[in-house]
Length: 213
Image (cartoon, rainbow, N blue to C red; front, side, top):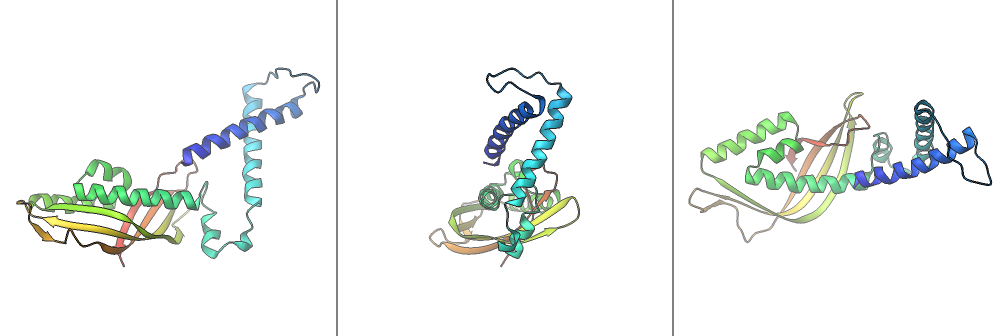
């Protein structure tokens, strides 16, 4: 979804740039003419107008009306809280399913290296013991951003609380249920922390820690 928003923004920005170039470089007001500009002129105009557009966007945000948490969130480049929550829910579902299936290839793309190594050990231990995991995510009861922490100048962490309904089973090699009940829907509260590099060109959030609450 963020990709679509970026494309829309760029299209609008291109229109603004060419309008601005006409006013800066000159054009006949009664007829349309092709404006020939150098690459350096175009890049300079692009950077100036892009900077101006972001500054205007920031001015529109009334920080006094935001909660303390949201005031911190707006400091994250290109951050959209609603899109983040939707993405976090999608990541939760994918990570839960991949962990249950032992899909290390998918997990490696969604969690950081330290957590990935811990998850890999659990997957290996289950496999060695012939244990099969089955998880069915029924749906979300609540998803809430709880806190944000700027680790340093290059990284930010966001803590998210997920309350979800799940059916979880563990089976032995013979397919017998050794933990859980396929007819029992659990309401589970998880607190997950996602991390991201503050580079504006990077929009990948990785899961770095989990805990039950």
